Length: 365
Ligand SMILES: *Cc1c(COP(=O)(O)O)cnc(C)c1O
Image 1 (spheres, rainbow, N blue to C red):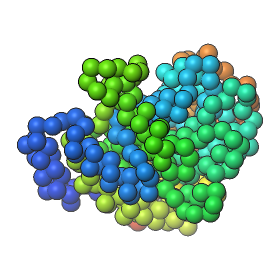
Image 2 (cartoon, helix red, strand yellow):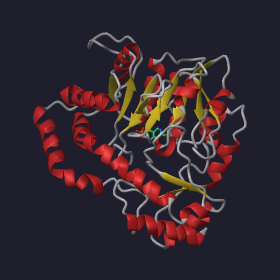
Image 3 (cartoon, rainbow, N blue to C red):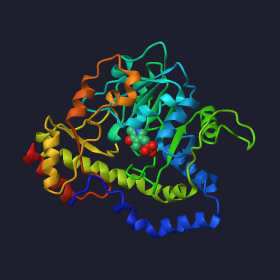
Image 4 (cartoon, helix red, strand yellow):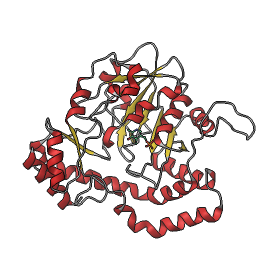
């Protein structure tokens, strides 16, 4: 591919010596799971986010399950979740014992809104799992005002900014009761393997998340909960600590790429995303819409441009989700699933590449 869909490698190449040093430090320490490297990264990430606690875990999927359980979600409860998102957002709910209740999204932001969440609330609703999809930011304060605790799936939106109820700007993932992150390599802060984190200002939630990630145990021979083996590796934490200071510049690059796409011929050819209200997205993916998205993707493929749909089959139609059929209509989910197409974007994409993609899409659309 002359223009890949994403490029996690180029931005980290200049950091090779620092990464080698960090990995060597871990090898020399002999401490490979949790330990001082993980604590140091947790503290650095918390400081950067402006959050009180970060709990490093094995991946972004388990971060959701553990965050929900730490908030008290369990059997008999319902958790509202959009159907238009990566499967893991919903998959993480049944392991808590609760049922996912699917809601619709806004057609332009592709995120849940207070209205789409309100339609899915029942007396059993215990939490809302808001997804900051594609790096955009859902209106967390408006949704929290409905009176249901909000957990933010921030896997795709590391570095995005939102607004709190009092009007102050804060990082996505710190706007609700808890936020969850993924350090999967293609995310905005991606490690060299799996990793994730739970973020919260609530001491009790953080404490419970720490317990659950380590087999429900505080001391080695007493097990208080049926928990998980879900820990962040020291090597990943050391690498993430090297990458973290560069995330703001990488996010700025993504924002500039999105702005260039907006100003290009793309705007007249396809549907573009709208920023979430009072937010500054971090565009992990640049997703447009067109009734013939697959034909455009095939045409781009012929020109050496990688473009793809991520969620052609929405989650509520996945075979595993059959027990949790939605009770609200999901018209925007259905349409977005059929029409969305992710165009190349990364922290390394060049202006020439963006112009080439935009011109090709305009020609094909
Ligand atoms: C990547 C992703 C996850 C899961 O993260 P993993 O680290 O891969 O487990 C969850 N939700 C969304 C929206 C994601 O994009």
